[in-house]
Image 1 (cartoon, rainbow, N blue to C red):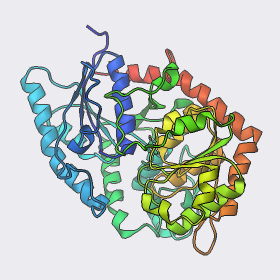
Image 2 (image 1 turned 135 degrees about the vertical axis):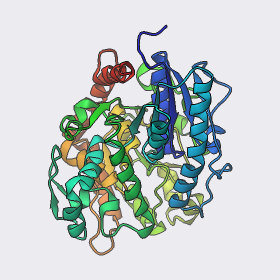
Image 3 (image 1 turned 120 degrees about the horizontal axis):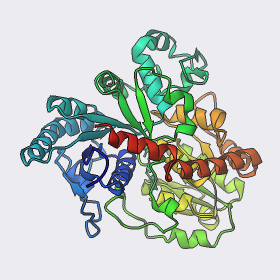
Length: 454
Ligand code: UDP
């Protein structure tokens, strides 16, 4: 018998790398606390989990979202979102009902961002549900305030990037710091995202207690900014091996949706001096134009520093004009085990897109960042990194076309590699992150509070 009241939890995760990573890591924390976890997402994801390594408290409940062989490049996000929801509603209903029918009902259903429908399914079955928000608390605040009083102010001024927006509990922002879906320049095909964010915000009226992949100390005011919502920071949701000192392991609690490269990049990193390498990665979704990739290449070459660069599109690598020079100075791979890389002593800085998992992983490993945000929450994350946590810098874009020139990449890389204050701040967060999830730390206390609240 365990001493807490929630003993059986279902997790429903959106099948993107950025949602699967934090939710599987969260599942691991629950299992360690003695909870039985049923993890549900699409068949295409579960197939990629290493089933040689199982855990008796973890059960997988895959369902078909209509894309069992993975998403084709022609499938739009909106189409996939809708297919996952339509198929997921039936599958999740079934899983909840059959657990109840066997006399072992779930105590809670935890769902990631982009799965707001799961809360409605749970509600219809008298099952509690809890959002696991996979972006910062600050970003949830922004969506909340947008739908509660600020929509007109924001939408009437969203073509002016410098227009100031002041929201309770948040630092002074401008339109450019808000999630990209609020900008007038947001592409039409992303507009539906505001609808599901509204669903998330509406659900908070029924289930106001949520879990957030953040650290209390990182977002003291934003976590408490909405009176009616209780945010429980349980982050950083990073692989537990990171703080246990053991190497990365294949486990049912990790899942790469991309093939591992043939290059032995760890062996290569082992040959580099401490804090000398620039790690470059833009996450699992963003793609840069070939012109932009060329600018980055010239910035990296100019910097003269070794680099490990993840370019998922092999077609782009083939087109790079400076490929021979690049190969001499660094290594290009199609994917890597990012936390293992960030935790390597050779890494000196991380040039990234500002995705929230990457941001938390950089904080948890004490690596300073250069942020070139692309979409979604990334501009807000970049603002916090530069102005609030001061663990990195944002790149400046060219006025005419928004491109970031090679010389700007070089300037920013040099700055974070050399700025003592930025490097000190980054190190500070590594310690705070470790403390938060260790015994008696803020995230450990919150996880227990979540489990104790029947
Ligand atoms: N990631 C990885 N290897 C790579 C690139 C990314 O393991 O080569 C992981 C990274 O550690 C993170 C996730 O993919 O956990 C990306 O999530 P993030 O929120 O940073 O960005 P997104 O992909 O959602 O834009």
